[in-house]
Length: 170
Image (cartoon, rainbow, N blue to C red; front, side):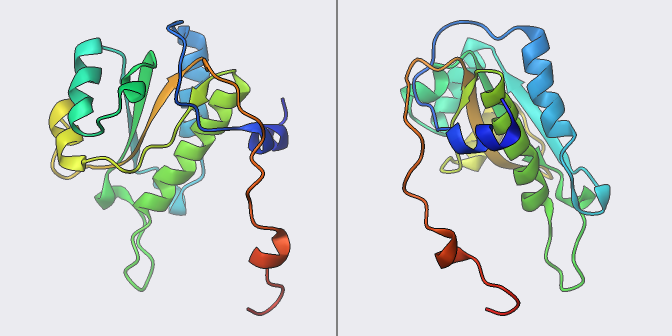
């Protein structure tokens, strides 16, 4: 599948098969995240790969949805803010950098036949406690990762380009 096909067909998956993900496939997906661009090439990201059922259950305190922990893997995307580039006006880029890496991971997963669902509505303190994340590290997003146990049609409710693109001026 090409990248544009992955972008067009990728869907958020909330039902997963119990099938395990082989090490090579998992490595490819993580490699896609590692290769993402970042501001000033700072690469302030870290990823926690959660496979232990006890640790996955402990993450339910951070995001209490049963389907979230049903996938064989949960990937937790973190940032080390002091490693990130900061724009002249003080805008920190760690969220942007980690989000780009996470999107690479999501698209690579889809290309490998895996489903994901970007999770942002979690309790960061509970997640940090469950995973032993240091105080100076931020959790940006989490996603279950597994083979889909549901099929969804293509996304159709996106705004047309005419509503979101401006040329030369706003």
